[in-house]
Image 1 (spheres, rainbow, N blue to C red):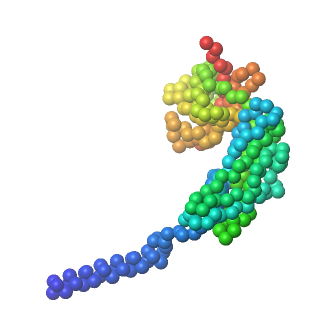
Image 2 (cartoon, one colour):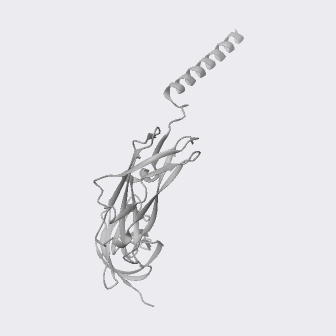
Image 3 (cartoon, rainbow, N blue to C red):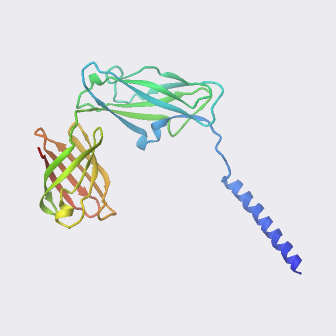
Length: 272
């Protein structure tokens, strides 16, 4: 009787395994994507958009950039010819803001990408201009074009000299009253900085807490703070805007999204 029970259990386990395996196959868990298509590498960025920030030094300046097109899937033994076009609704003007050196490029045989040369005519850019260039993949021969990543928008922006790193005395007026403090701004990369306390001393002087650092960007005097974490109290984010004034002082309007703490911080560089 025990032998019969063991045979029954083994048969049940084997049958269950086969059934589960069949279900896995039908559900697609063991399917490996074997497609083949071309796409812009950076089109997977939010909104299919990247930003090129140019620093202008003269009116004849031309900057060389590259836009990569990937072959997603196995490499091929023959080249893939790519035709690239410009969306007519682009606000960037050919010959004024950019020059597409060649609208026909080739992914070589046994390769997975090609870089499309793009010239940014930085010398023609004005500080008030914000041209957007949208490229599209129009043709790839017998190779499929990605339906999700066949368009890429390039925001062409002109930077200005930026040197905000240093120590600052601050005055903050907001929900915490008026607070005097000192902060340090550190450059992380061009046009991107970290301020040692985005609250300008409110967390320290009003709540007896730690400083809350945050990262901000600065482009031609305009400061932007986007979704910076509240590292002190948690579960909140800081957002804000600001401006670098002509006299070198900085004015930042910041706020928390959940607790609605806010303030206007004026920063004056400490000269040693």
